[in-house]
Length: 84
Image (cartoon, rainbow, N blue to C red; front, top):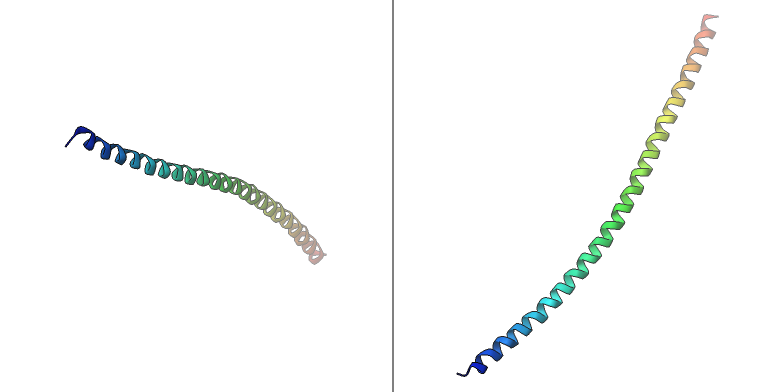
């Protein structure tokens, strides 16, 4: 068997492998790009949700304090009325 007959199949196999590998790598690159975009979007969404939760918690605390003060006023008013 001549050297050329041995080399040609190896070169064909190498070319075939390179083509398949490059297609696979291109596909993986596209998948990674998509995942990065999704990750960025989810991080943005998470940041918005955290800010919203912080605002809700502050509003709830403010309303609680306001209601507590109103209750104390009404309690004092009723206590004064009962003492009179």
